[in-house]
Length: 83
Image 1: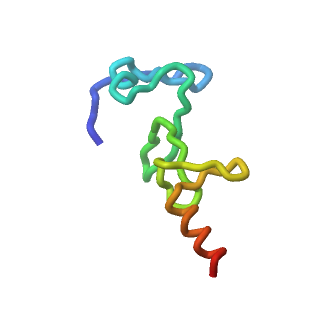
Image 2: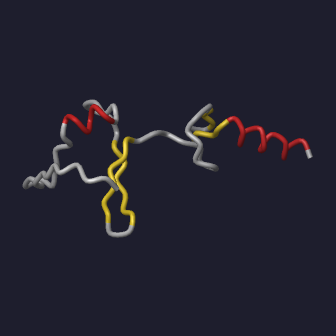
Image 3: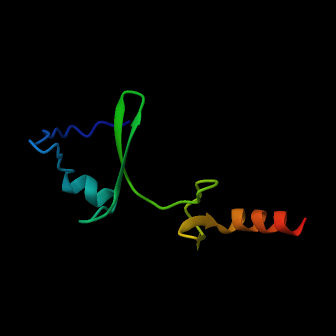
């Protein structure tokens, strides 16, 4: 992980402002969903990208019953039905 040298304080509501330089670098704009998770002893913020519920791929996604599935997994499922 690369240190930016930027320090922000958490406000009384638990919010932290992401500096504009970092938002621009990662193409984060107002109302974009941000994923928050813990990795070891680090809190990680990541711009949310929808992905396949089976393999995690984020490209060529299809929606089925309000779930996202990539074309590759959809083809594998389709092949199972043919057997």
